[in-house]
Image (cartoon, helix red, strand yellow):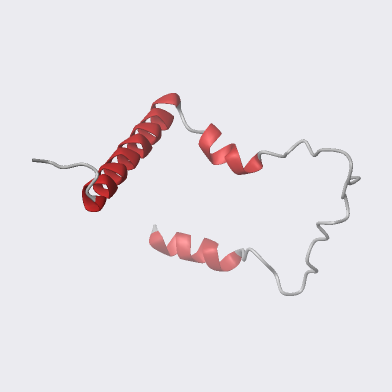
Length: 81
């Protein structure tokens, strides 16, 4: 099984040295028009299920609370005892 994977990986390289690099600026739109894919950086977050997004939001909330509490304790604005 692993030999087949190694053969497949060696047989089809992602980039061939003989080919030219693609011209990404070829289909550039006008500067004044907004692009349709403006929020492509959010695609990994938007592809998550609602449960996964909730877990990430809960973890972020917990981290902010913990870091804020630590900062208050260190600066002496909040005392435990």
